[in-house]
Image (cartoon, rainbow, N blue to C red):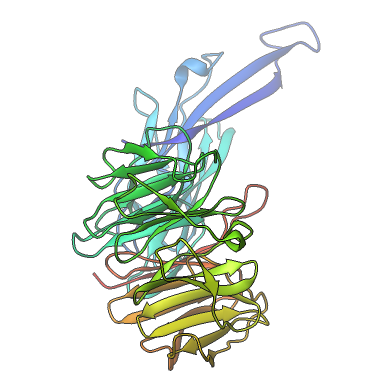
Length: 432
């Protein structure tokens, strides 16, 4: 039985003239309770895989003069039902029941109260779960789908890998259930990408690069792509399996042999820039540079770079195919399209947005023949040709990262703040 990682501890100071006849003397009552089955997920109207409830630590009780305990459960949100709403502990202090989620909301909530036989309440706590609804958008407010950092999808081998909360997770049969893999080396992973043969590469915050050839079960160290850099860098793999690593003040490095050897650019401009993802475009490569804010191009595999014509104040770019360049600039969120190698651009999408901007990374994605665009404070848009667009969901908040797994489930994610409430993740769960 899976148990939550936290324990409720109650210390109550009770006046007890019975135990201590002297006026004003006190006895300390101590009570430990572990919550069981918190933060699970399941399809709406289905049972959670693990029972929920609590376990009392009888050994924590200072006095044995306590009557029989019981736990009362109330469904507070979501419309689900529990098999038993009054539970009594077994000899190990465990009291659990099955919980069938409702279909009112994604958020499901139980309020639990532990009392003794005199109806004296020792503790009140909540157990939360998430109900998912297929062929619909789901609002996720807790769990490992909050603040997704990266995701790779292997549609050939029908699997996905996610980076979230500093850990890596592999997909299961359901979009709401991910299995933690862990990472056995120092430092947290910052970025993931995958080569065409299914090898996964992990760029770590300490400047190192690792790879896994068995989908995250085992990892091996490769190198530090950027010498003398002990901190983060940007990393991605182009469609020809070239590996690219870049960082302002260091430049851009390219490997054509899966990270064994690297070549460095010779363009001063690059060292003053933060770059977005690098894309293969015909026989050249393109990326968005922050200084200047322009698309830049290399025709010699990353050694020298030159600016190309770019819409003013552009922030991100995308290459859907070898004949199309997409650029997004400020002033809201304005998407431009070029079909003549950047000689000219045409405005194709300018949705209303209150937060504008957008990001270098994870603004664009593709699944089968459709392209998807994440527009902060506007929502998710879909197109086949970057000419006609469909607004899939309207979002007024700052979700700014878009991911799609191998089944086509869509994840619109925001930041997982430390000192503030995290931004929700919106998940479109495709039909089974």
